[in-house]
Image (cartoon, rainbow, N blue to C red):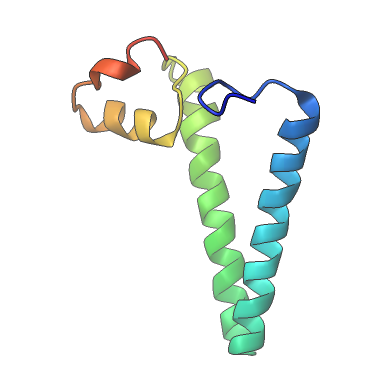
Length: 93
């Protein structure tokens, strides 16, 4: 498997998504076990929710409602929004 190419196999895409979910659950569980309080749990859930909404904003709202072009990832989107020029290797992505 060439790691420099885009991931296209549905099995690996789903596995990657499940692993991200497990990492998030494990991190939340360890955080709450380290400092077990309602405040810690509320801050963790609110932080996760806010990050998910930001991701939705970057890749759905901007493209669908504001007509922005698709971007290769978060860094490409943030670079475009900041007005910085695109890196030479990013032109075809």
